[in-house]
Image (cartoon, rainbow, N blue to C red):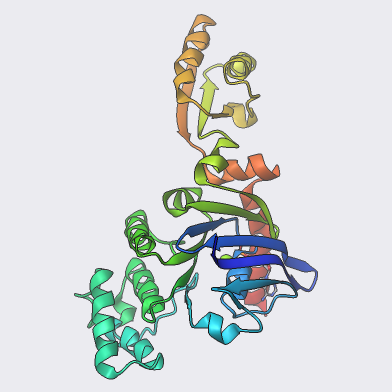
Length: 326
Ligand SMILES: Nc1ncnc2c1ncn2[C@@H]1O[C@H](COP(=O)(O)OP(=O)(O)O)[C@@H](O)[C@H]1O
Ligand SMILES: [Mg+2]
């Protein structure tokens, strides 16, 4: 199998922090790999190394068969990158932003203009194309940013948290655009903090935590490790929690978490829920809340790592505070 992206043993240190601690990953040509992980897991560091913007301290990586350090120039010619923060020029119009990139890539003026118009149309920005980017909504900016990374028709596209901070509608719009790229055979590496996003888009997922790959597989394989859905049962009488726990454990075969007076457990097969309801009814246990929902990234994380994803936010917040203070 030919890999569009291949990395072995990537290491990157920042002082005492190991941003990457021996990461292996591969993306077959034309596939979409989702890199899922909380803040600070090392996603952006990996993307920057693979996109030739940052040198690793150890390990090696290739894009399209070109070494990202020794053959950075060749690798770069295949790559498109959309960062976590929109990088469009605020003062220029949508058309000017894209046209300028085309010119920088060596296109003739008419060719650059035609490519810009084509991309604006494809991203639903034709009407707004003549307006300065500073008047765009967050979702429009991200689409423009993504369009900008596509001007040069990259074979390999890196999307670093493309939907973080977007409203649900803009997020769904962007997912549609990414699916379109997938159908055209572009290889995509997309980072996200959202299990749902990886689930919607990724054919394969690797989970990062503390600079390491801690799990990999298809979305279904990954969710099967925690249960595809989460059952929550909170009895009206707190004293009944023990009974709830034993019924849930008995039916599901896993011991529920009881934090906060609610029994919480992963469910592989939602068809077992009526059995739980009947057993509780027989025991005279009344539920104040009984719900089934999709497992969140947090729960996948908890199951995989034994800690919650948002533990990480503490050092991110500290870092942001240091940056503000500096
Ligand atoms: N330029 C930098 N200087 C110091 N530490 C950094 C730098 N970039 C990233 N880090 C640290 O490396 C770790 C991984 O960061 P990053 O790759 O940005 O994670 P993610 O994109 O998953 O949120 C974090 O602990 C972060 O604070
Ligand atoms: Mg990041």
